[in-house]
Length: 343
Ligand code: NAD
Ligand code: IPM
Ligand code: MN
Image (cartoon, rainbow, N blue to C red; front, side, top):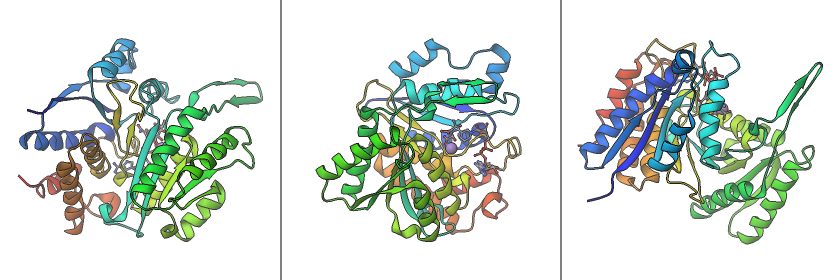
C-alpha cells in the first residue's frame, strides 16, 4: 500500500477559510480513490493571533517542517492587523524557513475558460529580494534591503530552464539590471550561465518594464517567465487579470534541494479579499487548482488532471461565481466542480 501523505492545512483569514473548505472536499475525493492523506488543521491566522498573540509558534513550525509532507494554505491578511505582522510571521516564515525557493504560478486560459487566450507559466523566486524584511524607517527616510543569493537564483532558474526545455517553451527572464545593478546583475549572470548550458531553450532576458508592455500587447509571445520575488509577484497578478481575476489563479511552491521533509506549499495567488469575506461569494477555483498542482507534485497525475478537467468543464457549462460574471456562491461553484469528478 502507498505511504500516507501528511498535509498541514492552514485556511488563514477571510476568504481563505471559505475556499479551503472546497479544497478539503477535493482531499476527500482523492481519499475515496484510495489516496492516503492525513491532515493536520492549524488555526494560524488573525483570529488566533488576536486571541492569543501567537502567529506561528516555533514548535508548530518545526512540526510542519519535520512531520508533514506538504502545506495547503488559504490566505492571510486582516484589516484589524494593518501592519500585516501575522501574515509575515506565518506565510513568509513558511516560505523562507522551508526554503521553498520555487513558486510556480501557471496562467492557462484553457483552465479558467475566461478572458484572453493565455498560456504563461511564472516561476517566481519565493524567499529573497525585498522579502528578506530587513530595513529601517527614520524621519524622512526609509530603507528596504533586497538580498539576492546565487544558490536561490540558480535553483529558481534551473527549475525554469528544465520546465521550458521539457515543454519546448520559450523562457524570458524579467529583470531591472539596468538600475538594480547588484541584485539583478547577479540574476543576469546566472541566467547567462544557464543559457549556455541549455542551448535547446529559446531564452531571452528583458527589462521588466518593457516586458510588461509586451505582455499586454502580445501575451502569446510568452511561455515561461522567470523573475525575482518582487517582480514575480506583480507579473503573476497581471497574468491572473487576463484569466478573469485573482480568484482563478493557482500556485505551488517547492524546495528543489529538499532540505526538509515538508517541501511543498499549495496556495492560491489571491489574498484574504476582505471585501468579499464572509459573504460566501469567493471563487474557489484558485484554491482548487492549487490542490490539483499539489496532487501533481505528489505524483497523483490522474487526480490532478481530473480536477483540472472538472474546473474547465464546470466553467464551460456556465457555472461561475460573481467575479467571472456569474451568480454562484463558493459552495455551489465547488459542488459544480466536484460533480464533474470521476468516481
Ligand atoms: P486580494 O487578492 O485579497 O484581493 C484583490 C481583489 O481580488 C479584490 O477585489 C478581491 O475581491 C478579489 N479576489 C481575491 N480573491 C478572490 C476570490 N477567491 N474570488 C473572487 N475574487 C477574489 O488582494 P488585496 O486586497 O491586495 O489584499 C487583501 C489582504 O490579503 C491583504 O492583507 C494582503 O496582504 C493579503 N494577501 C495575502 C495573500 C496570501 O495569503 N497569499 C496574497 C495576496 C494578498
Ligand atoms: C502573494 C502575496 C504575498 C506576497 C503577500 C501577502 C506577502 O501577495 O502570495 O502573492 O507578496 O508574496
Ligand atoms: Mn501577490
